[in-house]
Length: 221
Image 1 (cartoon, one colour):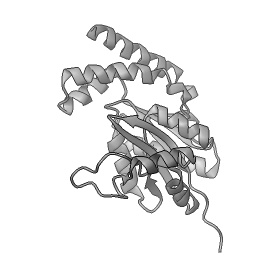
Image 2 (cartoon, helix red, strand yellow; image 1 turned 30 degrees about the horizontal axis):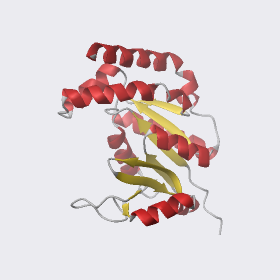
Image 3 (cartoon, helix red, strand yellow; image 1 turned 60 degrees about the vertical axis):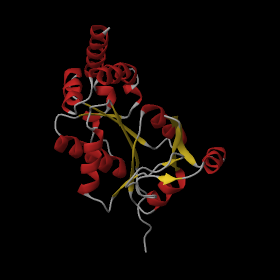
């Protein structure tokens, strides 16, 4: 019996308001046998309705520190008093079974993963414009203070878009899901069928988005 073809590690990052969560959810629904959403470890206590092994792997600080020392985390960070990380064993198990493992994480973690796994595919998801980002955040009933902080953070994130392999502009969820699945098909087959989505070919869009975000931040100041 032939061994299953190894899966692809895919990191999806994006601005707050870009629609990452919705897009990732739809990808998982599209083919749950093929796609696997990575489950992070955390030292924080589980919230109501959170399930160990599904929402997070809940571990203590001692175990977390051990995983960091032994190189068992693909990326790790501290946030709001809790420690988080992506367990390497979990990812490797599913990759060996032929599943594509998706990590929905921020830029710092994305670049840590790329350093450890150079074959990992980094995808940056963005709304078509800064105005769209603001509109989506307001649509979520976020406060203006929260939106201003998120947009300021987006200025910093925009400076690193060029370090991603692909750029997906989230005009519609359906198109974004299709684009990402097309990228993963191309990566699995080692073809270059997604040149149009390569970040290097979107320099004008990226610089335009950077200018829009910077203008919004100055306006807020």
